[in-house]
Image (tube, rainbow, N blue to C red; front, side, top):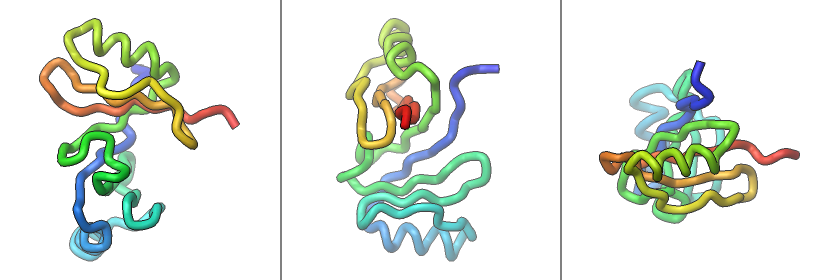
Length: 117
C-alpha cells in the first residue's frame, strides 16, 4: 500500500457561496467545513471536494490533487528529483505541513500531513 493517499480535490472559485450552492443543490454533496468566504470542504465520499478562492487556493485557477503523506519533505524532494517542481514549501500552516508542487507534466499537487497536537 502506498503512503500517498489522495484525500482531496481542490477546485477554484471566484464566488464561494455560488459554488457551495451548486455542489450541494445540484450534486447533493454535504458541506463539511467552511472557512469564511474563501474555503469550503464538501463530503465527496472517500475524497473531499474543496472549493477555494484565490486567497486560500494553493494554485489559483487550477485543479489540484491533495495527497496525504507521512513525510511531506521527502515527497517534495522526490517530485523535484523526478522532473517536477516545488512551487511552495515544504512549510507549516496552522494545521498541517504542506508542499505545493507540479508533477513532471505541470499538474498541481499538494502534499500534506497533520501537525502533531
